[in-house]
Image 1 (cartoon, rainbow, N blue to C red):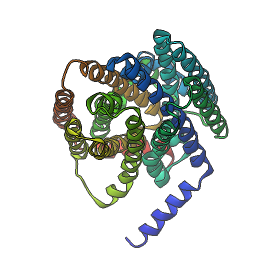
Image 2 (tube, rainbow, N blue to C red):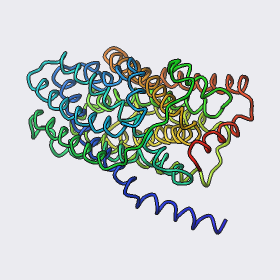
Image 3 (spheres, helix red, strand yellow):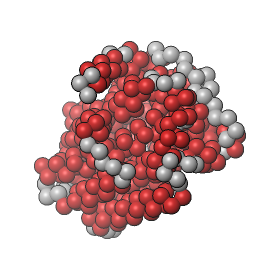
Length: 424
C-alpha cells in the first residue's frame, strides 16, 4: 500500500500538468461560463416578464430535442479522423447562434428564439460526445481512470462562474451584450480545441451500419455493470437534471419569491456542488466500497434530496438543500459516466455515448417541460415526490432485470476488450 500512494500522486500530478488535459479542461470552462450566463439571463427574463414556468424551462429543454432526433448524425460527426475540425466548427457555430438569441430576445421574438436553442443543443450534443472520445483517446491506464472522473469538472466550474457573472451583470447590461459575451467565450473555446491533437475516433465494426440501438445492444450484451451504468447515467441526466433545469428558476422566483439575484446565487451554489461531487468520486471510491448496488444507493439518496428541496423555507435553506441535491446527483453521474468511459470497448464508445446522450436528453426534455408546466398548476413538492418514486422504481427494476438476464462474469469480459482497445 505504501508504494501505491506515491504512484497515485505521481499519476495525478502528471495528468493535471498535461497540456492536453489543461487545454481540454479550459475549453469547456470558458464556453460553459458564457453558456450558463446567457441561459440564466434568458430563462429569468421569460419567467419574470411572461410569468410562465413552461417558457422558462423550455429554454433548457429545447436544447436537447435535436440530439435525440439526430443521434445518428452526432455519431457520424464524431467518428473518423476529422473530430477536431468538427468540434472547432461546432463552437464557432455556437457563437453565431448566441448572437442570434440576444437579438431575438431583445425584440421579443420567442418562437424563433426557441428555434435557436434547438440548433444550439445539436451543436452542444456533438461537442459533448467529442469530449468523451478525446478523453478516451488522449489518455490511458491510470490517467484514463482519473481523467474520466475529472475532465467534466471544468463544465461545472463554468456553470458556477456563469452564475457569478450573472449576479454581477444581471440587470446592468442589455441582453444583446450578454449574448455577445457568450459568443466570445465560444470563439475562445474553439481556439482551445484547435490546439488539441487531431485524434481519430475508432469506428465500430459490424454494428455501426446496423443503427445505434443494435450497436449499443451488442456492446452491452454480457456486461452487467456496463449496462447498469448506462441505465443510471440516463436516470441521472433525465430525471435529476431535468428537475434541476426547471427548479433552478421556479423554486427561487415562484415558490420562495426571492427574485433574479437568488437565481444567480443558486447557480453559484449549484456549480460548486457539481464540482465537489465529481471531485469526491475518485477520493471516496478509493476509501469506501459501496458494493454492487452502488448506483442504486446513490440514485436513491439523490431522489430523497429531490423530495426535500421544495421544503426550503428561505434562501439559506434553499442553498443548503440544493447543494446536497446536486452533490449527490453529480456523484451518481460521474460514477456512471466514468465506468462507461473506462470499460466500454473503444470502437463502441461513440455509439454508446450518443445513445446515452440521446436517451438521457429525451427523458430530460420530458422532465424539464413536465416539471415547468406542472409547476403552473400543481404543488412543487408533489412533482418532486412523483419523480423521485419513478427513479427509485426504475432503479429497482434495472437491478433485478440485470441480475436475471446477465451472467455474473460480465466484468472480466468487459475489461478485456476495453483494455485491449485502449492499449493499456
